[in-house]
Length: 390
Image (cartoon, rainbow, N blue to C red; front, side, top):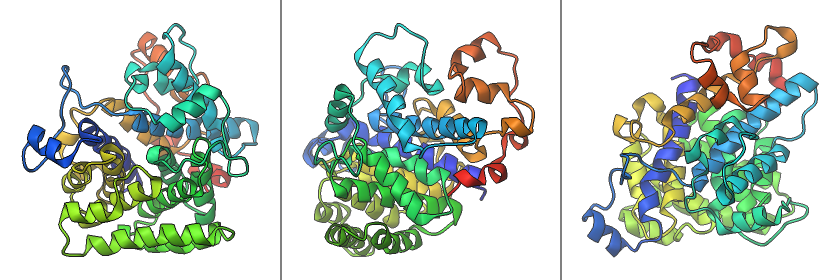
């Protein structure tokens, strides 16, 4: 299985889990059974247009991916680049403005923001929205609050998709991405851990269990001054691994870990469901969605991990064909796979320029419907951009 199929699988799996869990988020198990039957929700609950809607969690995950590619392109052109999370605030604020104001301008930071579904109001994290409304983002040195909520986790997914070389650096980038809006160490560590687990599955083709075990070792190295918090998070993750192979029922296993509103609980529940259904994304996201907690986040995490493991081509059509923004997600996934062209060393690529320099691709594409995308091999310059691929 090639890396492109894994990255596509992870991003579609994330969005699919989010869309499946969204209608039942925070519903009691009794209410879920009453609405969808004893097996709970097992297929998308479609809107009036026959579409499975994603939430703000996937929207911001996609913007993080867009932000990484923008940063890499800027770095390729200027020869210098800040850590990628330092570019994310502009993308998140653009998204926030589109959440709260009229769509009067075509000026966008990210090309994907031109699609209305990307900024439709869908269960945004209250913690993140408070930070966005203040315009003051946090860092691990200067936390903006003490939140350890799960709303930061999916934003770290593209870190794992994009980087492979330095495990500690991947954890650091994931943690710093969470720290923009969530100030508790648990949120940082869980986000960093998720980013590294994904990276190890995608780039080293490890099993989920192998990726988890390697990540637990790296966490100790990455946070040497927070041994107590690392120990507690590691214990929660190990409990998920143990429960995955236990005789506990699905719901009993999830209840033993919590409801998923906190970042460590959501990560653990997502891992539990992915481990019990490592080769079956339908089973993983269904298991993760049918509980009385943060159903969309836990299902999205499970879908990301299993999607990365089995690849896009193994995901059933019913979870792909009706998924909101599916074509945009796949196009963005392919851009993550190829990374950006090196403009100084080869011909310019107009598609890439209008995506990651001018950010007007959606409108440019309408005006130029006959323009073909450059062949994948022309856009693949990962060896030339090795300094960005930690």
